[in-house]
Image 1 (spheres, helix red, strand yellow):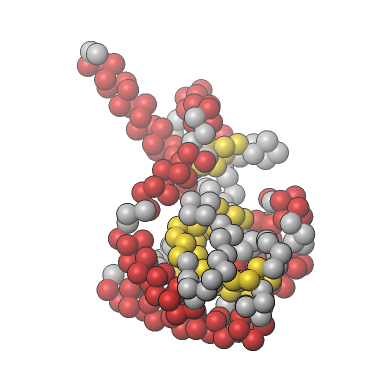
Image 2 (cartoon, helix red, strand yellow):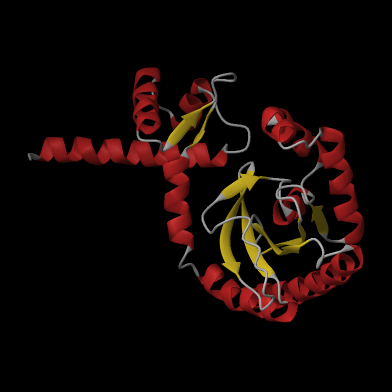
Length: 257
């Protein structure tokens, strides 16, 4: 390979990486081709060629209705792989294990990923009947699941409305209306913890609490158990416990940062 080819290859890689960063910055609402050109300084033909390549390799996705681009599945998988050994996740893992010991229930850790909540950790408690409603590395729309609902409640109402509009069909499939979602969000804000009862899996309930771990990053922990174990009084009790534990952990972590 001659020097000219090597330089050209490096330039293309830098452009593609810069493009991925732009998509990441616009993950929530997406960005159209003109926006990509403005943000990157690329000519239309170059931007279109790079986007087409990213689409083919599933590092980007394009909304057929809005024609806006976002990060694709493979980009997110790379991000998840990197998160497995970050200092943050290393710090959160012992805390997740502590929560599983305290509650006896299954503990889930999720992080916001655009319009979704991505499961980073799952720890089983001592209760004989285990609840595994989501696996590590899977994601769900915000508002679906106790952790995702807790994360959604931290967002402004306008952002929630826009998010629902983007995924109205998916929410409708699981029987979640905009009014029901906003009611759950308001209840979460009022109590300080989210509650899910038989929403995803019949006979399974959960409670969740979201909190910031940096200026830009929020995570949420949740307990999941069979509904007969996690009835209304215990949901309130476990919600209070989870909120207190998360507040204490976050205060210590952010104080050391």
